[in-house]
Image 1 (cartoon, rainbow, N blue to C red):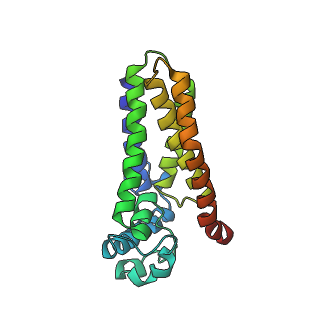
Image 2 (cartoon, rainbow, N blue to C red):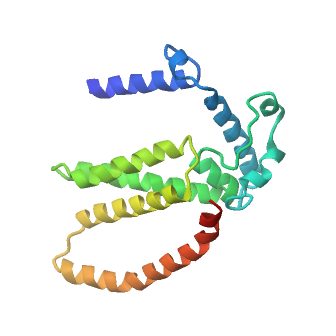
Length: 208
């Protein structure tokens, strides 16, 4: 409890310093914080004007200048094609439904991990390692643009965590038969999704 309290207080001081407030402001504040604030604010304006479908995936840069306000024009005044926040970017380019789905998926992964900690008496280093990597991506994706390769790894980590945790929760008596049947049913669908996703993502990969 002492460690958690110390960590929480340190986190508050760090966040304050990054926002140019508090004791650590002179050490932690960077102009890029103001720049990110402008990008987030303008990108959220894009999302509010296009709430259902956004402006199109990977198309924020085509509309960003249109939504710049007077406050941004006298500020850092940078151009961007990414909101520098994964959820705001999804909202701006794919609409709020897409952003909400991504947020629900992230909350589901966190919830299942915490639930597994409560149920299991032993420490599982493999699941904890996967979750730690997942948390690193989520933290970085809140303040920086995520490229295609990182988004792919986020999907792999999220799916693996949910699968491994669920597998540990459900251990049927005929588990070998069930696992084999499940593999036979899902493998063709997985191959189809892999081919389809490669086909869809190649133009973006080629541009990136």
